[in-house]
Length: 276
Image 1 (cartoon, rainbow, N blue to C red):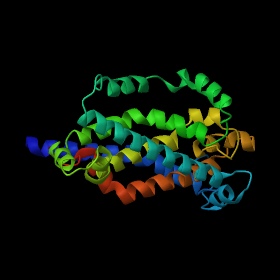
Image 2: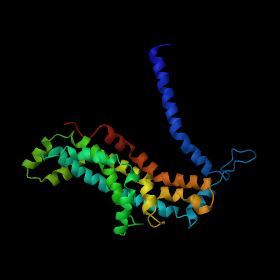
Image 3: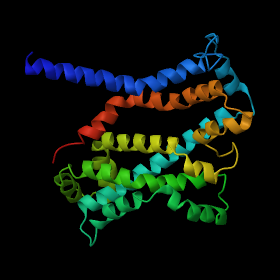
Image 4: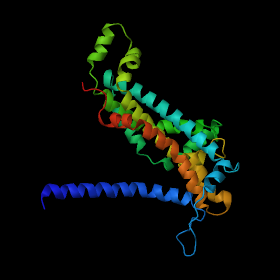
């Protein structure tokens, strides 16, 4: 057998394995959510197709699934927007301006991101208590912005560094300010990178668990990962059908966003804006 054919077979086999590895948990989650008996693989337990699990988690007021979903979307959108905005300002300053110690800013942020969340959660809890922010959106939005900034800054740095500085020089000659250059020239060109940054921070904030568990008390600010995790305490047992149905509902917004804007996300992560 030729070497090229062997490589092709291995490539296809690896791709199929990776696809199954990624999609199998989701398929199993959907199957369990649509079954009346989650333990249908046991002996003498029939497989009964039903959407009752979805009806229950969406209509039962004590579950508050839609409240959790709303909180997650609002908090994640706010954190992603401000993290991307601040990262864009910082990346522009670092790549376009000369000031002492600018090289240490991304390195310091990268070092900060290496600290585990559990090591700072106690200090943050005290701070949130002093600000009277416990069980509010602010208690999650500000930590998510801070934790998302290192990733956002490094992505935006990679895009802004590819843009020719001649664009800035020409705009400065025409009388534009630095902020006008960023807003009207640089940022529109680097929009794919900004959008991919926004989506990554959104997904991170949407899935974050520890801070959402520590800084929220009830459905007024609690996000959906924590809400689903507390289903066990809510019902006194593990309602796998409800948990799986709620998980499917929770990932629908993320799947829709990625499916709709996949082209721009890939473009932003791989191509950058323009080559300088």
